[in-house]
Structure formats: C-alpha cells, structure tokens
Length: 174
Ligand SMILES: [Fe+2]
Ligand SMILES: [Fe+2]
Image (tube, rainbow, N blue to C red; front, side):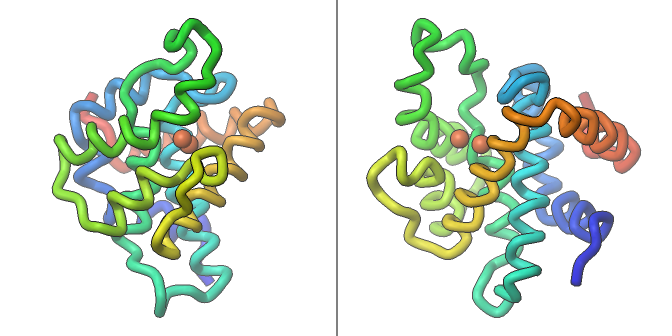
C-alpha cells in the first residue's frame, strides 16, 4: 500500500508538466473552497485519486498517468469562480468542466481518458456520466475533497503544509 509521501511523489512525477505550467499560477491565486486555492484543491484531488485506486486495488484497470493528469486538470477553468456569474455559482457548476477541458486541450496534449474525465467530473450535477473508471475516481475524490475543504477549517492547515512540501520539491517556478 502506498503511503502519503509515495503518493505525493507519484503526483509530482506523473503531473510534472501540468504542475509546472505557467497557467497554474492562476490556480494558485484563485480560491476554490474557503481558503483553499484551486491549485491546492487539484493536488488534493490527485493525491486522493491515487489513494482510492491503490486502496481499491485498481492498478490493473487504471492508467496512473491519466488519473493524475485528469485530477490535476479537472478544475482548470482558470478564473476565480467567486467573481463569476453574478455570484450565483449555478452556471459555474454546470459549465466549468467543459471550460476546463477547453483550456486543458489548448495547453496540453490530452488522451481520451483525460478529456472525458475532465469534462464529466461534475456528474451527477451534469447529466452525462464519465466513460472511464479514472473519471469516476476523480469525480469521487473531488466530492470528498470539496466536502472536507468546505466543512472542516482544520483541514486548511494541511494544505499549507502541503504547499510547503510542494515548494520543497520544486513544483513551482512561480
Ligand atoms: Fe469542478
Ligand atoms: Fe474540483
């Protein structure tokens, strides 16, 4: 079973191209839930996706690289959603998967699993379910992470610790 550090190393290795991309600077300054940035949320979703796949013994059915990249890009909409759609957040919930896919397709070479998992991660709020197991894992990890980040203030401190860890591993050139 993978431990926390091993999981972080997998995310850093498989997600390096994305984590180091200049547009990730936008995610670092956009807040997702509470004081958690979209960047920290995406790292958390990627780590949790790996943890879920590992604990459910899915490695013979899951593409690890596609899983990490889908998780890191699932909210790659590149704006602060609190300042969008007149504060209703209704349209954001329905549309940001497609926006993330458009941005991600512009900045990275994506495979079919990645494209589908990013676009459909908001299922069942959006009606079309993911096509691949990786998409279900990202969607589940996203919901768990979002719930924790929204409800538990003490969790936010973990992100700060992880942000320090990230800098130590030179995940940021910002
Ligand atoms: Fe999302
Ligand atoms: Fe998310």
